[in-house]
Length: 222
Image 1 (cartoon, rainbow, N blue to C red):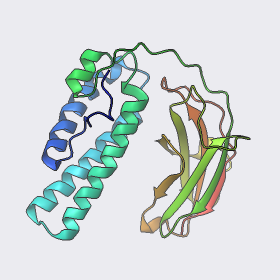
Image 2 (cartoon, rainbow, N blue to C red):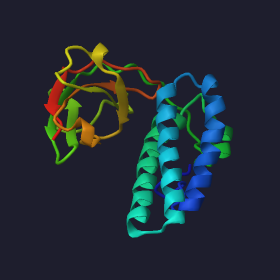
Image 3 (cartoon, rainbow, N blue to C red):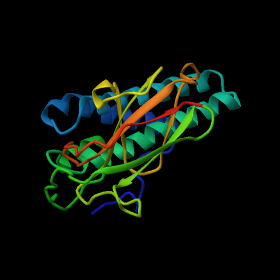
Image 4 (cartoon, rainbow, N blue to C red):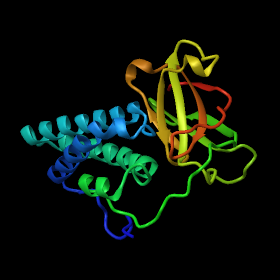
């Protein structure tokens, strides 16, 4: 069995990383219809992040200033983080096969996944400012003292919306993001400063099945 710890499967060089991502997304996108456990918005999130990296890389190649090089590095780090979460949540398991993983340049595995049930645990949350344009979300199993997630969960689904007042229901939230560990820090554009971000969190298993939603929490974006 190959693991990330033995040898990182994600290239660190910018050019190699770009080629790796083009190959992975080129294989993943048409296969998505065969893998219904992967939400289309998660694929779109990964692809959009990769586009930002490619644009930042091309800007840095044209004008290699320290600022442009730093922007390229940060964009690559963001896409790498999203990719690791995506692979751990969706691509280590059936219906994705070792043949698929080889085609995408991912590690292969010699185990058979044990099916995981839908999470039933509730989520306890805390939301607080974390500096200019940033907020920090802490979450854990309700009543637990540690940060561990349920055995059946790959991580947490975070629904959120920004507005002039706090949201009253999960149905009002128009954005979602997957978080594999707590705390989870979100950064917002300058235009959102002074507005209210509302969030709700639930545990999510590798099949995309969600548990009960937490209470809605809100804070002003600093």
